[in-house]
Every structure is written in structure tokens, then in C-alpha cells.
Amino acid sequence: MRLVIFLFVLLTGLKSKGQEDAIANLFKVDYETPLTIELKKASESDEEPIEPVQKKERKKNPKIFYGIKTKRGFTKTGFGKNTVVELFHYLKYKDFEGPGKYVRDFYYYDFKKKKILNSLNVGDPKNVGVMHGHYVKKMGEQILEEGYFYKGMKHRRWVRLNRHDILFDKKVYWKGWPEQSLLAFYDYKKEILKEAIPVHFGEREGTYYAFHENGVVAVSGEYKYDKRIGIWREYYPNRRLKREISYPEDPYDFGKKTYISKEWDESGNLIYDRNSFLSGSH
Image (cartoon, rainbow, N blue to C red; front, top):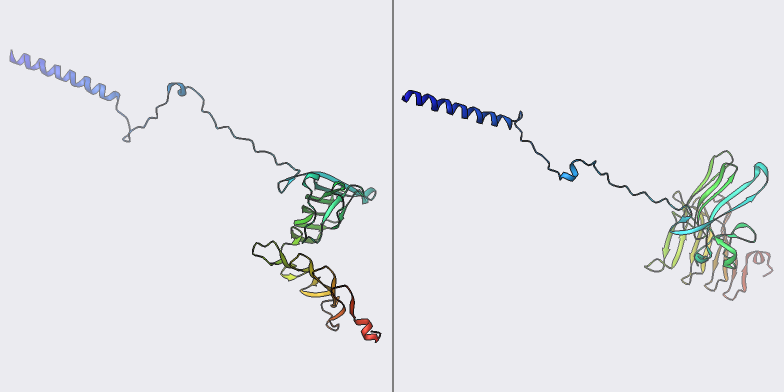
């Protein structure tokens, strides 16, 4: 009897053990690393993933230069194949600014004459468009000259090409001055210009200016190959001419001497003339 009971208990235990093993096998995985499951909301499980909306970049306004909106203009000269067209931008009347006291070259479009002028005598602002922005001069499809203006002054890179698309001149400006110019100031804020030495490819090249503290030109003259050439002029603070000094036109003409040709007093009276002095008529 005891044997019968023992066999019954043993069989019952084996059956229970088999059921547990079967249940365990349902959760058994074939890899050792635990599986990580990302739970989602029911509402998200059946939806397509939403891609972020990309904002369209705003197109640059082709009439805006250096933060100022301009107007377009053009001029046309010549005939047939020799027709030359200038395409440019200019400031609106409300944004008009005349030449500052240190500006030497100032470009604007004259509405009456219908051409671009370079002059400090602008006249009535209503009759001019101060050059500002991109400029290009063309003959047919061939670009002859291209650059940018900033409020009437040449700014950044300017190039000139011949009819065969060969570059023969390139200059870089900063608000009218050659970018490599050496500038000296009277004040720490660098607002009162004292001297502007033109530098091109490491040598003094171009027009030199020195200024009185009131902004009037004190000295002006030309440099070529790092040497002074031609007539240099000095001025009084009241703008009257003080002295003219003659240098050789050729910087390598060592046979020609430098001399003072004329001199005036502050009231404008001539006090020295070299030609008269040499002729004995003084």
C-alpha cells in the first residue's frame, strides 16, 4: 500500500515539474544578452514617423547691399557690337548721403545727364543717385569692369578686363581707400584722419593724403614704385595753397632734382616762384 502511494506522489511531482519546464520554455530566449524593449503609446504604434518640417531659407533680395535697399539703373553708349552697357545700383533719395570730408572720389548717377559722374560737387540730391552696390560694365557678354560701391565710394574688389577676357587691373578698396592703405588718426576713436598712405602689393603706390585736424587736406601727391613723383602740394588749414614741390615724373630718373617751384603766404599771395627767381625777374 505504501508503495502504491509513493509511486502516485512521484508521478504527480514529475507531471508538475514537466508543466513548469514547459512554461519556462515559453519565456526562454536564444541569446544571453537581455532584450530591451521600447514601449510606445498605442496611438503611436500604428502611425508613420513624423519628419521635422524644414524651414525654407529666405532668398536674398538682389537689391539689398550692406543692409540698404537700392534701385537699379543702367546706361548705354556706342552702337552695334561696340555698345557698352553699365549696370548699377544706387541709393534711394531717403537714404542719400553726400561725400564725407575725407572722401576723395565720389560716384553718383546724374538723372539729367544720364551718366555716372565722379565729383564731390553733387548738387541737388533729388537729381542724383548715389552709387551703392554691384556695378558691372559690359560690351555684349564680355565684362570690362566689375566691382562694388559703398555710399558713393569704391569698395572691396574691383577688376578690369580687356575685350579678350584678360585681366589687366585688380584693386581692392575699403570705402574709397585702397584696402592696404596705412591710416593714421589724431584721436583714439579713429574718427579724425591724419594721414593716408596708399599701399599696393607692399609698396607705396597711388595718391597720398595728409590732413589738418579740421579735416582740410594738408598734403597731397602721387607715389609710384614707392617713390614720390610729379607735383606735390601743401595747403594751409584755410584750404589755401601753401607750396608746390616738383619731383621727377619717372621714379628712376635720378638725374632730375627735387625742388620747390612755388610758394604762397596764408593770404594767398605768391612769395616765391622758381622760374622768376632763376630768370632774375623777381
